[in-house]
Length: 505
RNA sequence: GGCUCCGUAGCUCAAUGGCAGAGCAGUUGACUCUUAAUCAAUUGGUUGAGGGUUCAAAUCCCCCCGGAGUCACCA
Image (cartoon, rainbow, N blue to C red; front, top):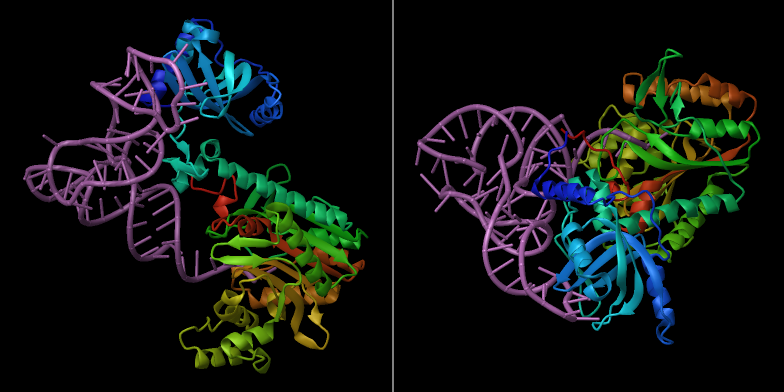
């Protein structure tokens, strides 16, 4: 049972009074002839020729200024705010008093009248009749917008607490219009990615979220149980193995945009469920994927922000192709002074890192690949601000990527980095079933004592590969992270409507 | 999970051991072009929960809950 505060108690009392007077507080239907934006546009269009614009508007009351026998108010709908002007001349004294007393900030109303311009110059609906559409019990966080003379809007005391904003996103959206704008732009981003891939003949598919076996990434899964089948199931950690099965089935270009689930830490760039985009492209290699990637991301940037140049914090990012390309060995050499090609075992690599950088030493138990990854993270990654492809990765941390011809320790893989953190990951996909089986077994050996990194052997996937898989390039990208970059948000929570939070007590 | 910081009225914030306050919102009244309307009066608190120290705790200590930052983790 809810406990009500003093404001809520008063509003519940008003609700009783309304019902006693026979007023329906939550009528079933509303009618409106214009959105707020349409009404303003219609008035502006007809203003010079003095065309009368009648309009029925609907929206939430955001401000009220009763002034004796006049009342000014603003309502807000999905398109913005419009001022309302009530006079006793039209609505009568009793109805005006009824409005002033019984209507509150946050209530939804339907208002009927004629568009006009006030003496102060604001386009306003001159109200002739009004009706309650939905009574608000809980007060929205108080806020006031003041438009300065130079046109800038100053916001006074609105909802700012990041916990409340995320937990009660409905209230955040209701009072912070820029938050609504963020999520409109996020939708534009996802749509742009779809349009781009559709236009490049990729087929959008949907693969299982609930899987008997997880794979395609190194992450701890969420586990659940199917009662009737009496078996444990996992929420997917990637789409990779299912999408590549489709290449075996002669679907040559496939993609999926959907949710991945990883049972790991939560941070400004990690949420336990996040939106992933993956595509697989038969007869292409990682270099072609690189070119498609820079085109796709720059297209998305342009659709969302209107430009390929995007401000992110203190950096202006330029997404226009071609992006900078850094070969991993070269990049590590330049930033750390270590040539990984001269150190072919994990032990060798550990010793040279310890000798050159005694303050930045990796775990001595790391594999060679993880040592290299450590060097990237410590030295190279922070330097990759402008969109950059880092390419040619160590084989042992890339069990699904194809080796470079003539270099068994290195695979044809790249990651896209922007603003110092990882945006996407792609490679020329391994399509040799025997090599793949060997890699799975090696992963099992290398990480046998590490529950989190164990890659379960997917026999069905190997069976699919044995039918024959065309050579192909594959790609994966965190859509939330791209949204952060394009929208200049520095926490993943700002681009998720309902980020993961602990249960409220 | 480690460390640091935060939690006070519906919202934004004061009060640092000595009577829990302000602005906005709310309530009552005045006001026929206001827009942070104005003016007058006024309501609202288990200071996140529990325990302790003290004559006295929002303030100091312990523990729990929630959050933020940071590190670890995250091919």
